Length: 114
Image (cartoon, rainbow, N blue to C red; front, side, top):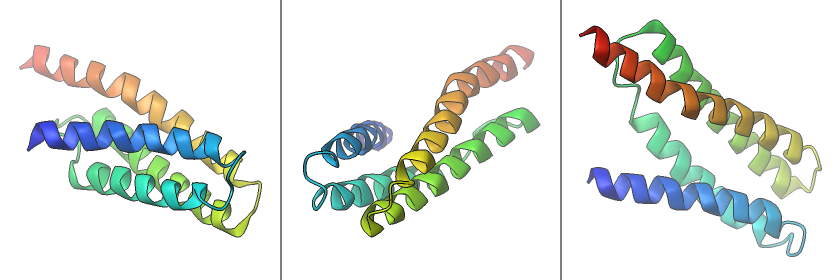
């Protein structure tokens, strides 16, 4: 099951990027792909909380949750035809990238402390 979750997580991330690019060429289809991908990505993120105990790790997980909310907002704006979706998506991507880089380091620190 863990392997399936990882595959779905990665595929949904790729679909999010693909739909952002696809919006330039096929703006009628891209929001639907984005909605599906963001939905899968967000469900996986919300249902698999930070496994460690550190406060910093939990804060970083909250960054991931905030990133998912920003991507949901970006999807809504994309459906409405508003160009601000790009700003919401970029902000979400920055939070997600930061958390994705730092969470494994924090987990490793917790593991070494034990």
